Length: 351
Image (cartoon, rainbow, N blue to C red):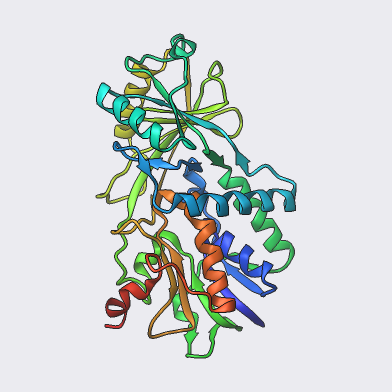
């Protein structure tokens, strides 16, 4: 069997890269073993244009956001699904200092930050002391629907092999790659946390972290917003809310923990006045990087082997832009963004 590209992994990166390459008229075979609790399927899907206690714009957000919205809306129209939920964020200020910082930034980032929330509207639902800000140009991406819909399309077109990728079966030459009878011009690894053990890219500075979330029923809470303080409460499927999440940089398993549940429920009880019921708890590992920048491009010594990975907690906002960028690079030779291009690690990868 001959194809233009083999893509390993069908998380957010593999999904959007295969979409972009097929739009370019290229043939693709995706290799992916379906797993229920991948980072993309557990993530809230939140796109937030600001970040941190200093309330600064997220890296490249002015470039990332238009590409993300355009791609998600295009996919939604193509398959008649609702991938984008344009919920605003209500930011419950944790203290006076943060409130002052938010107010100061709101004068700079008028397209994103607003101080027009009437706190009295939320007194009956939440405990808070310092007021509420509002963040706009935010969305929750239905990652599970997106990936499941695209998987069905790949199945229908015979473009997916649903099995665990076997590195021992891969043959690489400068001109092509071969895998179990499939020959392709290039293979692109979009293998998320597994990328850390990939023999071609294990030298890259991955910095994996584990995250846990709760799925909670809160019948009386409006589903028009994402609610944020030390926790995030985001509307989820089946009338549930996603609540989380943790960031564990040192961990020895990917199981859910009683400690996370107890801590999160304590925080929730101190914040939320409404009755709720915990329905489920999930955990997964995020494929983050040391410099918080993604990995995109071709291996300096093996030009038929590439990567798109390392989006961490920003996959929903970053993956559309860098999937399109890598597809354009592969098909048309368009340069990659220098801060994402793995050529910045040429010396490391050439050892």
